Amino acid sequence: MKEQIAESQVPALKADERERMLTLARGIADLLQEKKARDVIVMDLERVNPYFCFFVIATATSPVHLKSLTRDTSKRFGEYLPRKHHVSPDDVASGWVILDFIDVVVHLFVPEQRAYYNLERLWGDAGVVLDARQPPPSTRAESPDADPPAAPTSR
Image (cartoon, rainbow, N blue to C red; front, side, top):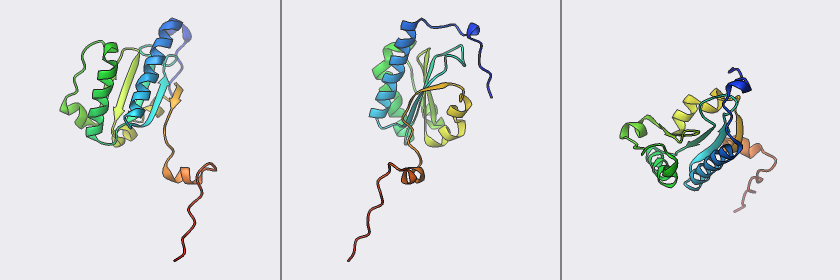
């Protein structure tokens, strides 16, 4: 398990800068949800990593969707990118695309790569700001809030 970084080691962002980065992270998460990305999560890494503040992690349904999410995010929030981002076919083929907004890092995966790298577990000491992950279908069916199964129809 990662050790917490002492507060004196973490260069604290000014409150207004932190709020601006949080707004950016949430805006990116909202766009990704709008574009049908799955299991979108925003993690606050400020206390466990001195290099960046937030991760936005999302899953694309296919390589084509991965490329589309990358393009749409870069287009909508490109003014915050330190340089123009180009996604090569190799980036998409790898199943993992990273967009680096300096204090906000966006990780877009296809399902297999997200499960393999499991950043949520790797950075488990970080706080979660937004969690739009869906429980597996079997868990949803057992949930007390789940709709009851449909009654069988008689013929």
